[in-house]
Image (tube, rainbow, N blue to C red; front, side, top):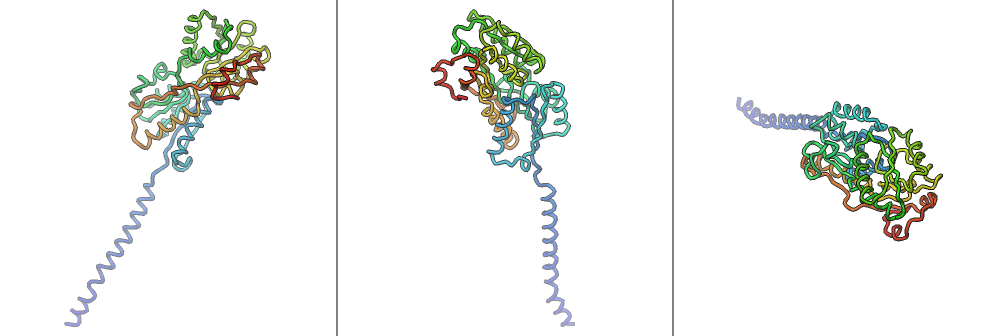
Length: 337
């Protein structure tokens, strides 16, 4: 009996050890399974761009650069879903509807139409924009300082007077200035109104031509031949998408073209005074990261701008249009193509 009792006493401590080891083993399996099942899913960003042309493409390029420079791996840490609306406002809305239905983590809207479409469909998914000149006028922000809802971003806003005065500096004798734009783009309408006021202040004539689609651009440019001394292009998506049509007419009839975005100077306008779209895209990307990973609230995140504009000249293009750019303008240009 004593032997049995002694044996029982000797064996008894071993049982809890086996149970403990088994319990730890099972716990490890459960924790491992739980961790695998709850591993952080990649962030899903939906990108909707109104139309593809170098200026708007540059906003997207800068945005992606900001994500990558922050150390995130595209396709692994962040999934980007990009759609091009092909210059169609209805398609912009359809794309935004898809993003809202899929409950993406953030929408990056490039140009005014896409951000208006997204804003009308969600008040909860954060929206960051770029390529929107006047978010307040577009009805998507209460002010630049405090947007007031789920939307913020970067704006290429600058007084058109600051851009179009380049015409007078390069061509002081010009009296009739042609301007091409799509009256359906709010962004363009606002710029043209400012240009009218500026022209009136200097006693100059603004000769306006409107287009509905890229198919109309060449004909509109041709209608300016013999009626203007120079053509000024605002940041209009329709016209910029068909810039080569304007340049064809300008070079054939030797009419200088001056634009409002740096990318157009690289493509062949004589000069441009405006923003660096890649820089503004990067700023938008940095804003998106703060919203997604640092808890920044779009409603209180100020809309950012590029306070100092860049000057770009393309002397070869200018010569093809019969223009010699003054040396002092060339000298201070940040970009020479």
